[in-house]
Image (cartoon, helix red, strand yellow):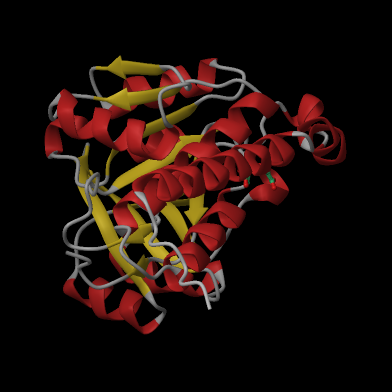
Length: 277
Ligand SMILES: C=C(O[C@@H]1C=C(C(=O)O)C=C[C@H]1O)C(=O)O
């Protein structure tokens, strides 16, 4: 009986070349359905190919099935670039980012989530980002969720049926040591049927702050995500479970003298994994 020859470096490299060429062929095969995808999704009419709910679901399934030596950071980054670039070739877009808190974290977030093919445009604050998206055909905007008071009441710029809306919260897969983990809201022109409504966001204006608001909102799976003085009033950004009817949220705000209330976006429920390092 002849013994199997030991594996050589050349054998391993041949194996890697075979796998690389299969992965490349699969990516080209994935891209071959783009034309049909554009037609079926009617992207030319809507001007946008984003399906944030589908993306959140894909990223979640990817994290859940991933195992082995390769870091989740790498796998997540590769798929973010695949998905963002496939969206880009269906309908070109740019990513507008608020760099008022520093360029580095926002650039990392944009490059990680959208890759290098999608143009990256910087702005001085969240409101300028929202305006750039409003003035575009189908661009995206990103800004930090934890904006300071100097950012103004940016969420009121999302009120109105034609105004941009929050469509996602990034990163999709949260963990303490995420390489591009700055929590950001992603805004786009209204996506109508493409929006995912696990968490729904509202802009509200009340006469005053009242501690009963917090418990009243919590009873309806809602919380205040941001607040700012608004003349003699107080403006609130409220995040609520999409399962709760908006009339219940409205009612919980009434004791504080609610004067206006509008939906300003929605996103997928948060999904977190344990630290992977
Ligand atoms: C391909 C689609 O368009 C976009 C790109 C995706 C992808 O490349 O997997 C997923 C969701 C969309 O944001 C789609 O709608 O399925």
